[in-house]
Amino acid sequence: MTTLVLAASLFAAYLLARKGRYLFFSDDVYSGTAWLWTQMEALWALTALALLSVWLVPMARALKAGRRPVVSPLGWAIRTACWRWLAGIVFFGTILILSFGHPYYQSKFFEPWRTLSAYVFSAFLVLGPPYILLTNLFRGHRFEDRSDPLFNILLLARGLSLAVLRWRSRSLRRTLANRRVKVSFRDLLVKLFFLPLMVNFIFEESSGLSQHLSTVLSQLAEGQSILKKTVFDHAYWAMFHTIFCIDVGVGMLGYACSSRWLGNRSKSVEPTLLGWGVALACYPPFNQVSGIYLPFKSMSTTLNPYLQADWIDMGLKAMTIALWGIYVSATLAFGLRFSNLTHRGIITRGPYAFVRHPAYTAKVLATWSSGLTTFSDPRQYLFLLVWNGVYYLRAITEERHLRLDPDYRRYCERVKYRFIPGLV
Image (cartoon, rainbow, N blue to C red):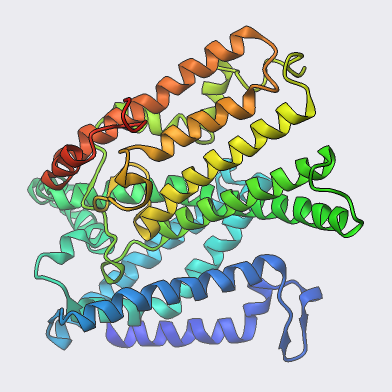
């Protein structure tokens, strides 16, 4: 098995060296011995550097604090690394096939995700064995395997093979009943749903940022005032896209980079259908369905005739940006622990020191302040009010999930308000 893994890794490295440009680079961006990077490739390279930098910080802290992992026998670590590498090939290969073959991912919206899935699969062929070997060799504790998705995939495959070939389902039932295994697979489902969205969102937001920022800079260079309506509007959208570039960038890293080395593995995942339902209703493609029944954004194309003065519009937009700033500060407070539907530790810093759900409060208020100038039908306010109820349910289901942790119960005793300090 070790020889097979070594040979496969060398073969993958050879393919990347000889044929890599056909996988990742078109002919018009490759010249001789020099790599010429497109915008997408440069973004992925910067993301890789960011991953390396955020990995080094907790590792240095762990060494400084004297936390030393348990060293496993080398032979055992090599054997298990080989099997987990094969399980990873099956897993990432399945993702690659779905990304390029499933109709849902064929739209132009998912083009960045399709590119990334090819990068990830090729990188795993080469970098997977040493990473898995190091992870197996230096373990935090003896039961850590149950939190490893690749280990659990092997357990599931073993249970299925025994159930199908030998009519012995006990191993399969025992695997599926294990709490750590269930958390691991639910965590994978969360990542597989949200990570493609975050990858594509960051390209959408960066495109909008580039467009509006270049426009507002050229307007300011011409001597136009920032208080001029057209200049202010472009500045507003540039700040809006900047905020969401940060938000979805942190989210993308949080979903992609959960690891023992980073200390951000999921302790538990939302166990109820209601919790999953209200969370998924806020994201594509499910928000398209909810938007049909609650069309507060799309049912009217005319502007509010009572709030069309420039100073009112600019004031509301400034308020909206301030609220989105609070929203993204909540995301930054999570850092690499950010993930919907999962419990990766209790966050008590930033806006979470004042209320328990600052992101939902800021998002709801920002939606109201941005909608006041565009809502001309009274029903839009009613639909938005009902939509706010979805975020209230998200807060309630999250608290019900997190209250299973005594640390969160103590946090609730210390931070008494859910949404607005001193009120509610």
